[in-house]
Image 1 (cartoon, one colour):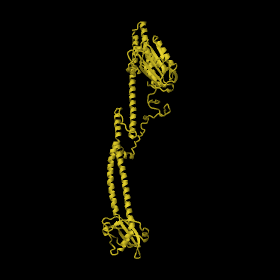
Image 2 (cartoon, one colour):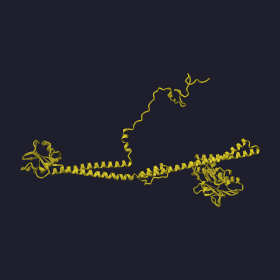
Image 3 (tube, rainbow, N blue to C red):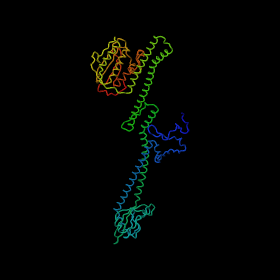
Image 4 (cartoon, rainbow, N blue to C red):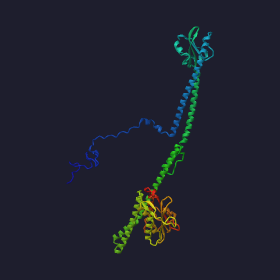
Length: 545
């Protein structure tokens, strides 16, 4: 029975989800927009504009740091000088007015008495700055100001408000300031009121001094402060610019170095500065960071290089046995193996190629597991017993070879127990690979020794010494590389995959040990394996050799 076509009654369009359908985890499926073509589309929310305050100060953020520092310094210096000028002007003006008040208090009574005695010319007086005004006790009528006429013509006379006897008596001897009127250069006056008895009548007497001298002094001081402040601000701005420019020079050097590093030169460093300064501390931190970055990039490049070489070598190693198997398979398919002898020979060769591929894959698997950083087992392992077993294995491989287990020093017997903490299977594989190299790459019947002992720090040492042709220093520096073969005698046909020494280095490194090669006295090669003491191994893995 066929399904109804799309659009027919009862038909279901699989491309359109059911409005009530849900997903496997219970969430509702979104509705198909095609099912509601006339549905209104919700407009996207408008992007909120930047705050007005941010836009107002955006120009300040675009200014260079040195410009802002100089501007701030000049503004602070200007504000400080203005404040100092205002305070100085206020203090000096108050001090000068106090001097005038003190002068008035000391001389007001004498000036008033002297003026009262000058009855012959009551409207004139001696050449002095004092001006005296008489009023009756009620303060209603007032005499003309008495003083030196040139002084009155220049500064005018004080406008003293009317006051009663009681008010004047209450303010007797207390100076106050009033405005002046008349004269070519009117000024304020400082006035001292008093009540005196003249011819049996009480009279209000006002003795005044002009404040023109105070005003002139304060004006001159203000001009002096203004010009000196302007000079100080200009000089301070210039010095601030030079100091800021010099102080920010290390930051410009950091900027230049950062640009060169961004261009790809990771060897650049920021010039060293004393770490007691902020720039010096920043430079030291940046140099440390750059060193770590350079090391990380170098390690990454080296890892990639080794990986490419590893993949290339592995492909090259697997290509030959695979090609052999493929070739013999084609021979069999073409019918070229027409006799049982040829078939048996072909099967032997295919089996040999399969064995080599199996060995290579197993070695690669071991290295991959070690590279993963899997922790090793922490069991007590007797290296002396393992060395004796390895010596027997080597003697079994070559019965004509003399194999001895000795101590580290010449003529010393091998200790019975050298216990370390580690993975017994992996450590046994180390000795198996080393004695296997001796069996494959040294002449048959040549002697070999396995030396076991303790290092001065308590670590365990195993040395595998052969008396073959040995290796050169250049070969010794690469002997632990993967797929490396020292010479033509170490080829695929000899049974080696080129991974034996790399596995040794990886296992020893996983036990936090160290492996090295050196020349055997009298000729040959010595492989030295150093493992930490039982209490110095924490079980963590390491891939370093």
